[in-house]
Length: 152
Image 1 (cartoon, helix red, strand yellow):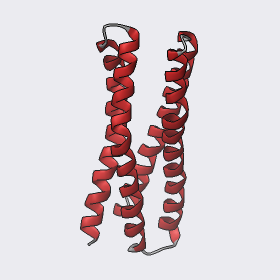
Image 2: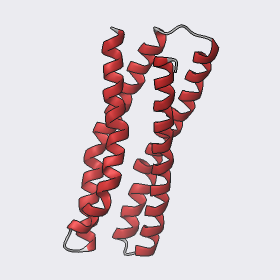
Image 3: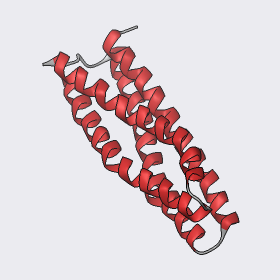
């Protein structure tokens, strides 16, 4: 059972982190695919909205498979501390993703639709910073996960 849970956890990590990296790298190209700026923004928004259910589904799988894995692991010592530290980074990653999905992303769309390109750009930069923080936290949490599984 542990092997199955570990496979599910690794697959979910791949989607959560890999998907965020892929979307981040595609956004500039997607933005330029439209014939004009509003069309490019619509393409970016559509891609981001399509990714959201997949990303959050992966995150839910991460939580459940991670909890099941930790229940099979002896508590205490450095592993207990590493798990607690990992959870801090997991919370930061999820919070950053939620802020971006529910806050900065929609605000960028509203500012652009209202004809405020400077405001939309500032918000997009803020959203990118939040995303980088969340992605960095996810990668650090993954490192803790590797430590928890391997002890190395």
